[in-house]
Length: 103
Image 1: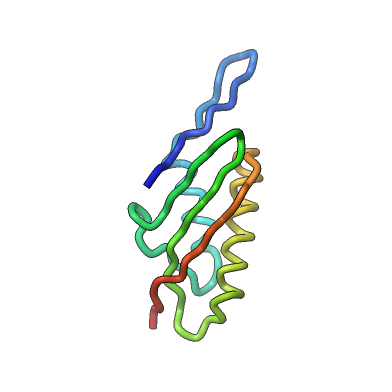
Image 2: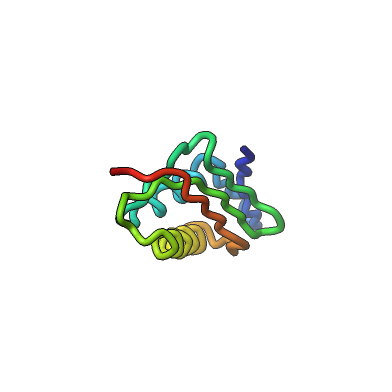
């Protein structure tokens, strides 16, 4: 798993958004979607930043009965919005794998 920090340079100094903060944004946004749970945050989450764009790979557990493509699209939208609004980063991709069903 790679988790890259994001550094924002400015004339007054630099701002670093730690990798764990980026991961926390992703997890919180994903789990705001009803029926979604991040399956293994330490192993099933990859956040990488290159050239000011972030790419996320995320493993989810979905509640039984959820329409999986709709759930995944809602998580993609929520994660994209959280990263864009919270960090100013462009989001290159949010790749989701539904790995488990919760009763």
